[in-house]
Length: 481
View 1 (tube, rainbow, N blue to C red):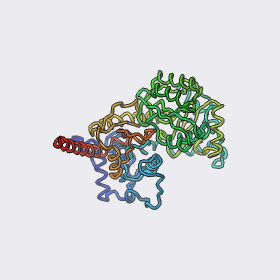
View 2 (spheres, helix red, strand yellow; view 1 turned 135 degrees about the vertical axis):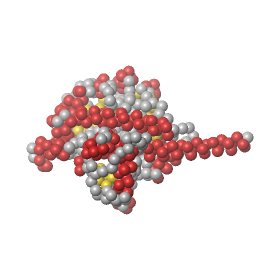
View 3 (cartoon, rainbow, N blue to C red; view 1 turned 120 degrees about the vertical axis):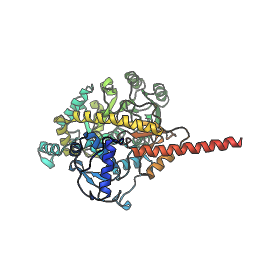
View 4 (tube, helix red, strand yellow; view 1 turned 45 degrees about the horizontal axis):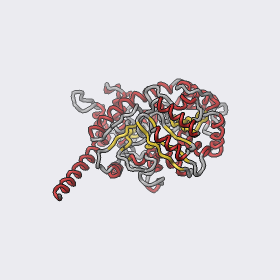
């Protein structure tokens, strides 16, 4: 076992990362070797578990070690990408929405997912212990032969309704429908309520997979600017007058990609506009679990009148579980459930029983508290490193996973993003989040991964080179005058 130099200016997490990297490089820790658990190594070195988490996260991102869920951490067996290229089909071209979603979920070893929408695996490994899976299966009266009602297990829907009532939403189990996450919720809403030629209002910037799904539905996308305090109300009113949208998709809490919130006054006006212009509102609250306070939601203010609310447990609890939910009035929930039956019939009973066990055991709230504390620390560290590298963070947001940072004027954002991917860093440019694809100087940063010095060093080099090039051009122009 190695020791740490507590008098060194090098942070303890960096020292742990460097020591382990050296042991692995010298084959003192051979491929496949199991590492100490986070708690074991923290106890042996006399540091906090979070310090070990930071070191392990960096080593996982570098492809040096593997995280295998509850089995622990192991020295990586082979090269950074063990899967032959011929065995992988790319869903789209580089920087397309489906391509980005694929990269975030393929998680090729060694690629730093600096713009992804996911948490590090190490942050989620304790959310669902193996015992909870066993107890969840024991809840099923017919074991692995158990069926799940299309609307979802009544007991689980009751638990979800209890969570929503805790957020101030007047919901009972009869107003809840389970889904395979937020992505399926979007798909069901499109199938149930939209027809080719309909107009749909969306926030811009916004969730890029939503835009592609709407284009697939053949609707007219009506972009409405998003502000730090909520959607642009004047622009929304004008868009409604001109286009008469059937539906508005909105993220009122921890907006993706900016991390911004919405004031209660802004949301009240949105509901007034929905009433005046006769449109439905689909409220995306997938990121809301990460909010450190008690934000106001549209569904809370409306009592679900005209509002279809949806969220997910995938990001905050487990991507392996893939469960989300929709809350709506029965008249709106019925066509949504019909579309669910047409497309997937029902969600997996095992998933629902496991989630029911986790919620019933009271683990969910404690898990969210830990995540929010980690995210708060990550946002502070990432913000400091990004600013020092030259990234502009004009509006920090209310919390959660994302930081919306702009590159200095004159820097080729597309070029930086391309070079980042060649260097093993996944960044997503602002234009990808624009409903109309307009150029944007921003990049979405994942606070959990953007703490890594590797990202700050890359950006510092790129922005320094861009600044030098601009000075050369300016001198040449001045000399030519």
